[in-house]
Length: 352
Image (cartoon, rainbow, N blue to C red; front, side, top):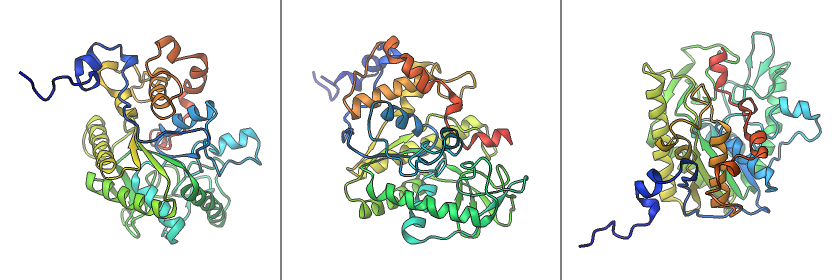
């Protein structure tokens, strides 16, 4: 007798791919659609976890593309100003809608009703990247000028990147009721004031995420026809939910929506691929061992596993099933070990 599963490769069968495999050897990053070579300009954006990919690529000598690099500044000032955290100083683009509105601002001149928020200390911030300037700006005009410069670098990324890596992070967002603009943080968390007449909470659906991402990709390819796009879903849980339910339930909803939307996008676009960082970190075989004691931040061992799979799949540089002692080298510990080295605007909610 035969059946459709006769002769199935090991990676399709749970016991052969998971139960009987050491957790650190599990590798769901199969069949990559493209290869990343050292000459390619690789740009990153999105949620916190995208920063690990850029760090690893840089450490291996790949071309992590950073047009907005602050090269003229001292190292301490570059670090404080989030230069190099992503390819440009856009802060965390947690939602697809933030990414799309940034694209529309650059290429279609999209304007916003709110352009500067004031902090309690009197300084001003950009509502769409409120944490990129620790000292703040001295006036709304200074915010506008800095954003204009920022957009020139964003244009360069969209027009010239060879690979664009975007990590989907959240579905919950705060929006302007006036023009529909999406903020990375709720008004009043880092700056500004919440006004129920002007601001509203929204939790994006699968269809909204998919359709907005599809529109962005279609227009991105118009201005950069050869670009490849790599999507990931952040394995970092929500730090807070505005829905009237447990934060675990809201986290499950958010990640499920993002994962399904990502799948529907890659099924429809041959230049888009998905890297399973979420699955590597959160799968049941790891038993939660890839998280810090707060059960939220991904620890160095987990990051090392994910990046080992990424490098093996997309660069062919190193085995994907290295022993644990090799998987977390001293260099990896230094690169991945400090959770404080990862910039996550969402943390400001807890601090506030």
